Amino acid sequence: MINTLNLELKDIPGQLEKALGGFSKHDANILSVVHHREDKTPRGTVPVEVKVDVGEVVIEKIIEDLRSRDVEIVKVGEENLSRSFMVILIGHVVHSDIRDTINKIDDTGLAEVKDLSLKMPGINKESTARLFIKADGESGVKKTINLIKDIAKEKELKVITEMDV
Amino acid sequence: MKIALLGFGTVGQKVAKILESRKNFYENKYGFSPEIVLVEDSNSQGYHTNGLNPKKLLERKEEKGDVGSGRKLDLNDVEFDVLVECTPTNLEDGEPGLSNILQSLELGRDVVTSNKGPLAIAWEELKQTSSKNDSILRYEATVGGAMPTINLAKDSLAGNKIKQIRGILNGTCNYILSRMRGGGLPYDHVLSEAQDLGIAEADPSYDVEGIDTALKIVILANSLLDFNVKYSDVDVTGITGITSEALDLANEENRVIKLIGKVNGDKLEVGPKMIPKNHPLAVKGTLNVASLKTDLAGEITITGKGAGASETASSIISDLISINRVRNFR
Image 1 (cartoon, each protein chain N blue to C red):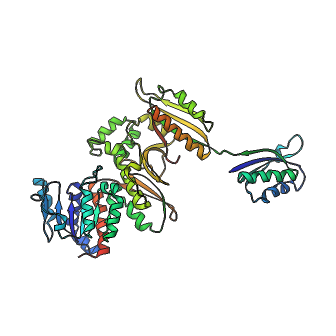
Image 2: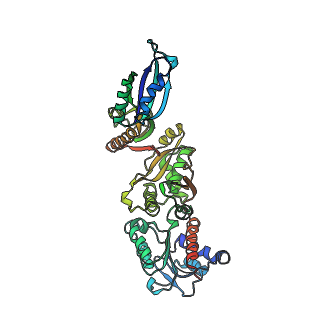
């Protein structure tokens, strides 16, 4: 699990080392450290963003440790690496209520339809839609695709996904 | 090598023709001297213990539509070394191919086949019968025509673990999708064009519904990944109903749509997929392509003609020569 910790450090020597000590003590794998010197806070502290790959239990210990070191923790968040992918739907896409299709995807909270292109060659002819969808992480993509397949089955639409999605 | 050739359609005839015309070449280069002792089509049989004359056989087939009078002999009655099984694929029960192959393996004779039905239906039984009787079963011609997919994986990539297989394994579907994209043409129009060109059958469902691709995926999964799966284990979607608008919308994003067969993890799938235009699998026309992901050699992709009499015969003959190397038939 990737976690992002937003910290604020005093602008005096040795502060970063002190903070990172709280991570190394728990064998946390630090993925990146971004030191925002140019974005000093009104209080004069320096924002630092640390990304780590650790389990839930370890992250609690790290937070405890950082507090005991007097390191200001602003925000802790599990990161959802969002992924965009494309899906093509063929059939009576509009008449089977495209709005409902989009709502069903958006309502999962895992994914969001960001873009829709529609081609309608003629009245009573099947239309074709291309959807760009943004989903949370691999599991979000997988769940969303399964949902789209279920919707397509119910609405008698043909689904074309990307090969590697 | 004494050959029993069962099935004398376009593929069987081509094999006979090449074995005859390249007799000296094969003898000199490989020490391979095949003789067709038994030939059988759907209603007749020809047999000669010292080998039939392929030229006369082909002439007779052309003139009279048969290869002899009646069908009296059983494989049990015939002295042969290798069975070449080219009867048509039957999805229901794999017959008559399945019985022919099993009988030959039980007799301890080797088999080369281009027939997908028996392999897709009764893989375990064939595998066990072959190992129990120390008879070799080779089937390169069943997948990808001339493309050396199975033997590439088994011989050249021996020692690797194959993690994933993906490919375009049906030339008819690839022709239809390539042509629709190139000309902005509707599916029905391109299908009828393909039928006129002899690329698609009068009843195209076997190809366009993805059945043919699924059978090949089953054969690859069983033989290369040690699965034990059947046609019904594949999630199959064909290309019927694909609109030229779908190809346009994909094209706007630099994608093409291809009927992809895939074995990944324990999942077997056949369906139309979007792939980047410049992807190695994005081959055009009737070409086939297969990509094997291996643990040591990385990803290996091969492409070639997936169908046609001489391409299929090429795979059959290469299997025969391989068997000859092992057995040293004279």
